[in-house]
Amino acid sequence: MANTFDVIIVGGGPAGYVAAIRASQLGLSVAVVEKEKLGGVCVNIGCIPTKALLHSAYVANTLTHQAKELGIETGPITTNYGVAMKRSRKVSVMNSKGVEFLMKKNKVTVIAGTGTLQKGKKVQVGDTIYSATKGVVLATGSRVKGIPAIGLGINKTTVISSDEALFLEKAPARLAVIGAGAVGCEFADIFNAFGSEVTLIEALPRILPIEDAESSDTVAKSYRKRKIDVLAGAKVLKATLEAEEVTLEIEVGGATKSITVDKVLMAAGRAVNTEEIGLEAAGVQLTEQGFIRVDRSTLQTTAEGIYAIGDVAGPPMLAHKGSREGVLVAEQLAGHTPHPIKYDNIPSVTYCHPEVASIGLTEEQCTAQKLEFQVGRFPFSANGRARTSGETEGLVKVIREKTMGEILGAHIVGPHASELIHELLVARENEYTVEEIDLAIHAHPTLSEAIAEACLDSLGRVMHT
Ligand code: NAI
Image 1 (cartoon, rainbow, N blue to C red):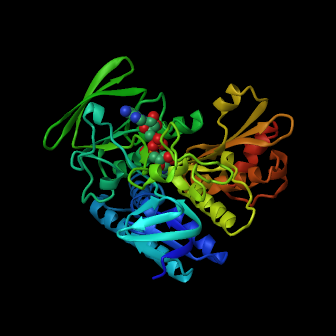
Image 2 (image 1 turned 120 degrees about the horizontal axis):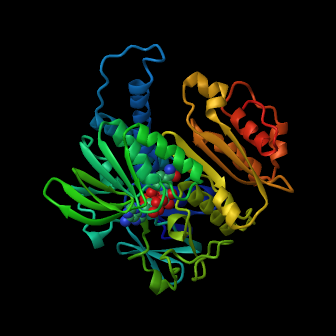
């Protein structure tokens, strides 16, 4: 095998493997170094298997709560997490093999092992040193983290992370989820549907704290209806670990509460993989927050010819942000001048039920920035299509800049929010106004009509409420 490539990418997740495909499409010779399975966290222990489990949860909830009303008679519904888990693994493996296929198809060399940077665009894997003529791209991703300070270091038995939750054979009877970001909310939804008694604990005043307050409130209300104990503004003071259970002392609403659970699922954020990849020796510096410091327009690190993309290169830690960064770096290395990335227009999606999706600013941020804006809302309870499927929780919220009509932010909570957000995303990317969205005739009956109506509402012309 040749030891010199145009581009060497360290890490084969959604950032790294997409960079590899694009670089290869542009005629560069490419190697990807991967120490585990291709596809990274997303494909193997993140986005893909969780979405498979969330689909099982959705079906379980539909059968439990809705089947009768839909005219479907069932016996008692029983769930089996182990079976759902095994299906999620199959989906995951299928996707990882898909990435392998794409690497072959694009003639990308995959080097199995741990890559360590060496000075001068070189990467060592085992005893071999590989050289890049154009650039080395770091795409080493992130991993889960616990809170060892209060005894909640991940021990993989009673204190687990999403890494272990994805492989459990059965749902724990009692589960505490610490952190109500995307990971926490998605797993609370999954385990609730599979019969666990779930307590969801969030330190900040509301769950999904980065989302618009109305989205957070809608999900919290829905969760409480499904008997998930949502504790926001809650502080875990102490954890006592026994062999098979954990007792948490939690301060919430001015009182102290104690709960005993079979497992604690830590979902309090992720740490980036920057250790032991030779950054210091190669002159690659970190930010105060621990990410690799990059120039956001080129994604070059502080070392010439070394680039960083994906989670290691800074927030938001999302697969699609990493993939786009991969495309940008590949195009640059091939001598093109790619469009800059609009970091303020990256969609955020949480695939819990109801789904949450957003772009741009929240209403709180618009107020804090003293912007002049108008808010348009349309509830799914008034949307014909949502009524046909009985999924009427939530709303579309569009925030319109008052003078020019541009979309400052858009927030959807409800059925298929993850898909619906893209109409607003494309509109905002291309600087369409709210009025221009309304000009496009939306098919009837569709959930998308709720978007058109929210736009109209921001103009004071809503039709169906
Ligand atoms: P996160 O940072 O998004 O959320 C963690 C939450 O835990 C925050 O709300 C934080 O306030 C809370 N928290 C932190 N310490 C706490 C404590 N001691 N007690 C109670 N609450 C505490 O991290 P998360 O959800 O683990 O996700 C990690 C990354 O992966 C994020 O960037 C996320 O966007 C991404 N991700 C995206 C998904 C998606 O797009 N659907 C799914 C899963 C993860």
